Amino acid sequence: MSTMTRLSSVPYTGPAPTNRNPYVPHNAEAFDRRGAEIRRTKGLEGLDQELGQDLPTFRVDRADIVGVLRTLHDDPSLQFILPLDLFGVDYPNRDGGERFDVVYQLYSFENNERVRLKVRTDEQTPVPSSYPVYRGFEWFEREAYDLYGIRFEGHPDLRRILTHEAFQGHALRKDYDPALRWILTEKDISRIVPKLAIEPEDTEFERVTLNLGPSHPATHGTLRIVVTLDGETIVGADTEIGYLHRCFEKMAETHTWQQVIPFTDRLNYMSAIINNVGYCMTVEKLLGIKAPERAEYILLVLSELMRIADHLVCIGTNMVDIGALTNFWYLFQPREEIYGLVEACCGARLLPSYTRIGGLAVDAPPDFIEKARRLVEMIPRYVGDAEKLLTKNRIFRERMEGTGVISKEDAINWGFTGPCLRASGVPHDIRKASPYLGYETYDFDIPVAYEGDNYARYLVRLEEIRQSLRILKQALDRGMPEGPVIVDDPYVALPPKEKVYNEMESLIYHFKLIMHGIQPPVGETYFQVEGGNGELGFYVVSDGTKNPYRVRVRPPCFAIYQAFRQMITGGQIADVIATLGTVNIIAGELDR
Image (cartoon, rainbow, N blue to C red; front, side):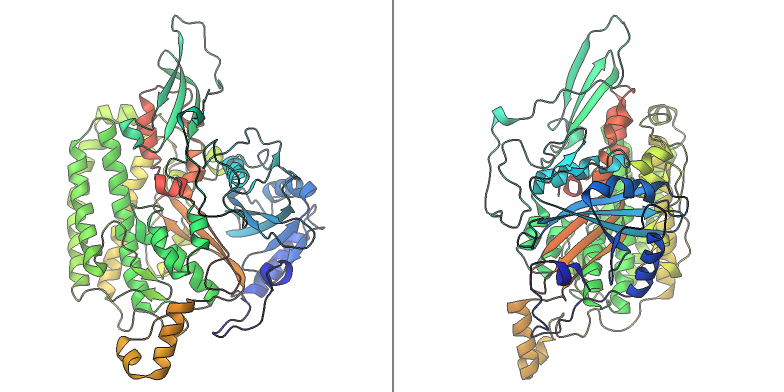
């Protein structure tokens, strides 16, 4: 039984006119059994387990949360050492007055499993900060404070993060009017003074505080970095984000489930289709449906091409920022060709919105395989040319090796995933750990480097391009399956036009879907895909209506960028831009 059904004030009114039954996750009994095993661990015996969820899920008293997190982190049989996500959900009319759920999601590399914790609180009562156990929850707690007003006792720097200081209220509360706007004037701009992480030595240099961005060309108008310098050495640093914040999660609550898809395009716009896939597969999981085999095949091919394009842009623009323009032209040519294939499929390039819940908007063009094969054959030449210019280039290596270093232990504790985690020595990839779209049937490797520096991140992304090409070659050799590209379910997909014009039932289904939208069953679920920058996950809550009750996205950039201060402190000012490029911060995903 879901949280919404059992515990929230939103009433479950029984089956809707469509096909709504309470959400029963696949394999829920197995997760319940695993949850019971976890509860038998010393220190976790008192946890209140929620049954019937898609993950082992526990309700924890506020006062106990830090101890429970520490046990989950430290116990040798559990080792939930990766902090994945922390966010709020608002149930304002719930009995007892504790309107907020603070949701924690953790991952164990050892057991390849996830766990979810929920803590209830209200506007006044603070929750003990999880920062002493997971540094990676620092910014997530600030976000929950900013958007819900949830306070975290013991947090080292609890202040707004996505909205500005002149913002009034908390945008993700259910009683907050989404039409409200608050203007930021010059007097309200944050005055950031970095804390010194390194005590400067007594040198001839005067200490200087320098502002980088958001107008700096390498910060692309969306990132602000403030550094304190002793000569050219950074002795303190801080960052400010939110310049591109549009509160995607609030907008999702005011639109139908299908209308959310274009918003997901704007997250990581370098590989938008992967975002679409992640969101749609989450809702499909809630609906208990699966896209047709042909649609999954097309999505796998496009996802890998998007991943290649994402890495090409990352490497190419990073080289521009540090003064190596030639590579940009080598790497942008195949990227443009990839967008040509996306355009042939749906008519759009950067922001395609090609997916639908249950499949695709339209079928791929007849020459899809030929065009994709041409890309697979041409991309290695461009990548090889760029590699010849870079990999053994002495100037490039001296800029990249030993700079922007983050250790394996720190990368995990900060919540890194994706290429940045793999470049610090952790061979973790969602396509292997929790396969989707049929990835388990393909033969490919997970590239890993161990140095954790800018050069390691470059090498990992370069090799990942080759591994994506390897997957694509296998897929193209298999050929595209026959069949439809959208589910044959009148509660999810619009009937074909010819049926709407000639059959009364089809006309009714068409009308109901347009007017009432898809209405998933009451419940909540989480699903994750391997995005260009790591684990891209969506947590959704449905109250059975046409609009999502809650959509939460787990943005990989957010976890990575919070460690940026540590990565650049102690280094040279000139290395900041190189490091910013290799961690590949996408502002749409970071700020949402």
